[in-house]
Image 1 (cartoon, protein in one colour):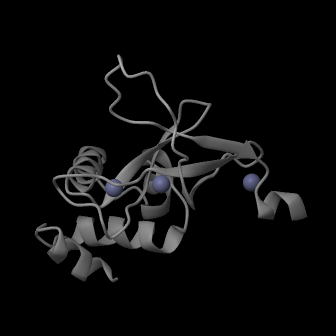
Image 2: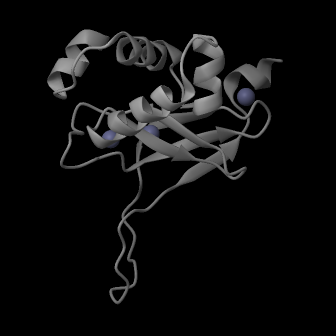
Length: 137
Ligand SMILES: [Zn+2]
Ligand SMILES: [Zn+2]
Ligand SMILES: [Zn+2]
């Protein structure tokens, strides 16, 4: 789906910043942090506007957070099933310990028998390793 369509689907008004940011995520094929996004877009983008854009994208079900062992928070494109009421990004993420990139894997987090007396909101699963690009380098 294209940026314009995605914004429409998620009831977001089309702005230049939103379109640009979404295009970066659509073409990146990996998770991008705020800093990575900023360096891709260039300095003419206002920092605060970018923060707000990322937050509203997360709120509306366009992007979800991706965590790794270094503590860097990145965002990645959501599946078609995410919307403003719920995120369904319960898949495994991959983190390359060499280049630091993170990706969504098309692999659901396996069912676990979590303790019944705990209130669990989210479960994250990260596979650490070396990505294909770094294996070739
Ligand atoms: Zn989502
Ligand atoms: Zn890598
Ligand atoms: Zn993901």
